[in-house]
Amino acid sequence: MRPYVTPCVFGARGHLLWKVGVIDEIDLGSPETSCERRSPRWGQEEPAGMPALLVALGFHAGRLGASHPRPTIGIIPDMSTQPIIMDGKTVSQQILEQCAVRVRAIVERTGVTPCLTTVLVGSDPASATYVKMKCKRCEAVGMKSLRVDMPETTTTAELVARIAELSADPAIHGILLQHPVPKQIDERAAFEAIVPSKDVDGVTIHSFGTTSFDLPGFGSCTPAGMMRLLDHYKVEIKGKHAVVIGRSPILGKPMAMMLLARHATVTICHSRTKDLPEIARQGDILVAAVGKANFVKGDWVKEGAVVLDAGYNEGNVGDVDYAPAAARASMITPVPGGVGPMTIATLIDQTATAAERLLGIHA
Ligand SMILES: NC(=O)c1ccc[n+]([C@@H]2O[C@H](COP(=O)([O-])OP(=O)(O)OC[C@H]3O[C@@H](n4cnc5c(N)ncnc54)[C@H](OP(=O)(O)O)[C@@H]3O)[C@@H](O)[C@H]2O)c1
Image (cartoon, rainbow, N blue to C red; front, side, top):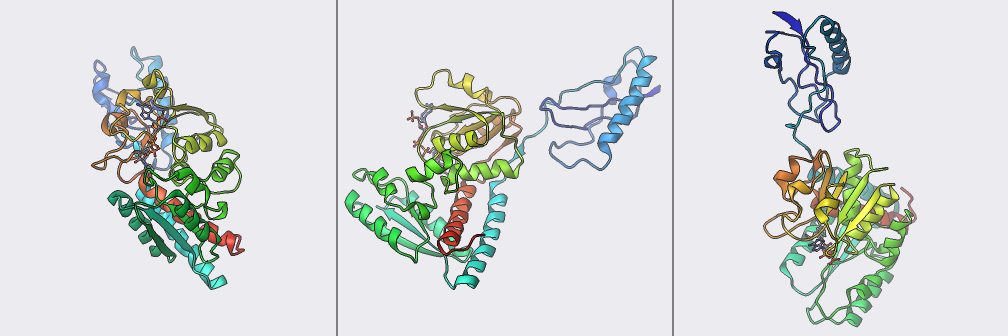
């Protein structure tokens, strides 16, 4: 029996792990039996001095190894670690708390309460629920929410005229037209009736342009929320290959532009993309914005990738087949509780910003 060291320095995903790495008494004939898992969770804080201890142990092991027939120092890939779950619920809560502080300051300085107006055309129950949720969040941070409900039979001209009125109303600081609108309406024309300074949902061509040029403006809320989540979890974007599946004007396309503006190399995939699984597997950052439940399979995910699932399908199911994808990802958003709450928080945050700008406050 002799002491020896089994340091495990880096996991397969390149993160510092310390699941083993302590001196143990072992039988020289079966060194593997000495492995002891000390830190089961990837992403937990390392105790102070742990890296230094590993270096010291490694040095010690090297010395032992010189006279040892089977040196035991080396890299042991750890395939069993869990990904970090990107907790949009908690992060969005923090954003909303900051918004409440900003709203109080706006009211104190100007006497004006910021106001978000939501426009709902028709009676789609899912849309009605989304609008209700947005109004509730708005009020929770101290803002006013004004609801404009229009009938299913509304024409493009009627909707455009109503939105133009809201755009001109100085008491309103943000306008959101709930998507989708009934088929007879030209949605693009309706979106374009929103004045850019109140386009807090980031749906106009002007907002897409400012996003693409990385200029001040309002980003489309779902992609902007995903970017905030990436930043919160300190995901390095620069130089990474980002694969975005979906190219809708409010989600896939602006997401790709935001990633490009942050110096990712971006591939945009859509319904006519060939060899989609092969391309998806190249993504260090993989964004699913398709609208099909469990569409992205586990083996489409590159080992160690950061996976953002914007999908929200019937039964609270995302676009990513979660369990097998999580087994390969380094970080992943859950559904629900990932991208969804970030979208609403971004909307509220951008409404506070719009109010600050319109009222001449520069936060
Ligand atoms: N969490 C939130 O707050 C939030 C907000 C908005 C949307 N969502 C969800 O996000 C998802 C996408 O929404 P969306 O508005 O972007 O949907 P969308 O307008 O229907 O766009 C879907 C995109 O997916 C692409 N696509 C469809 N089938 C495909 C296939 N077989 N292979 C590759 N690409 C395919 C389409 O390609 P083509 O362009 O070629 O047709 C399109 O670009 C939905 O589940 C929606 O509910 C969530």
